[in-house]
Amino acid sequence: MPELPEVETVARDLRPRIVGATIVGARCTWSRTLRTHSPEAFAAAVAGRRVEAVGRRAKLIVVDLSGGAALTIHLKMTGQLFVVPADTPVDPYVRLVLELADDRDVRFRDIRKFGKVGLYGRDPVTADLVTEAGGGAVFADLGPEPLDPAFTLRDFRRRLRRRSGRLKPLLLDQSFVAGVGNIYADEALWAARLHPLRHAASLRAPDERRLFEAIRSILSEAVERRGSSIDDYTAPDGDGSMQDRLQVYQRTGESCPRCGRPIKRIVIGARSTHFCSWCQRLSPADRADAKAILRTQTGGVVRRGRRWTELAGEGSLGLTVAETDRAAARRRTDRTKRAAATRRAAARDSGGSRA
Ligand SMILES: [Zn+2]
Image 1 (cartoon, rainbow, N blue to C red):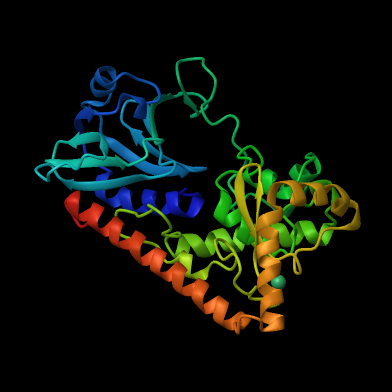
Image 2 (image 1 turned 180 degrees about the vertical axis):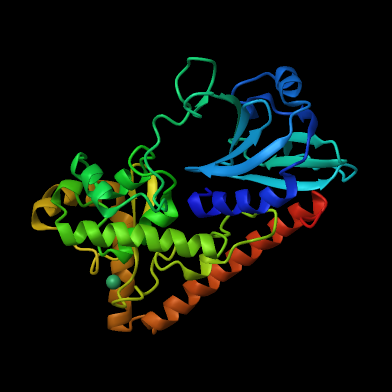
């Protein structure tokens, strides 16, 4: 699922294409894509409005329109945005089309249909997005933006110390910090050498600093590299390259780049979690109850990681760790290539990304 860097990339690619354009109509073929309006009401409400700005909050693209309105676009699992000439054939996965006055379409393509588009007003006093005058702010429950220069280590510490619970679910909690998802939570925890099951309350000051710095540096690098093109993610100007820089995410069984031991995968709160159990140790206090989670939820997977080491050690199948690594890397490369081919085909069907 696209996270902060991917959504930021889509927003940046869209901005020069649509700021200044006027929306003349909208067509929606999957009404549940619209969070706030019926297709008819939505089309009537956006027609005649000019696009004034394109930004991002957490994992949502925010398109400011004239007259104090704003669209929020949540890509969720498979959402993609393309800007194409209006006469480009529409592929069957396009759920929403914004028709622009200059004969171009903004097309929201979403295979799995989890994506959501909302239309809100801006409160004239607070500038918050609101569903109606005097209503609650749409983004009220979101935590701070981790890349905001105003977000400091002190803020991060203060927030951490108010929380209980384990680090992985905490990082995924959008009310803690906004925009971090499964990929960058795993990468940040590995970089900070913190076990995903560690309790937030057990962190010491240097741990907090490492985690803060890891989150910021990984997200910044990922924005620079236009995000990770894994699964269906692509942006109007094309794929990202951060997937090549990920150290643990979806690298189960490969060598940890720091210590060489196999990366493990466990499931925490129904989310895959990738880590190195050697570099990311649990404190004795956390180990006792985490053991139960590791055993009941994920014994099989954890054992697989261990078996590879044992096989390599015994040489029983004649496989070395390096060989299993290469096989895993090859499978991953194949998977990424297949996904990229699918994305390019989709972009072509939508009329290419260069319109
Ligand atoms: Zn390691």
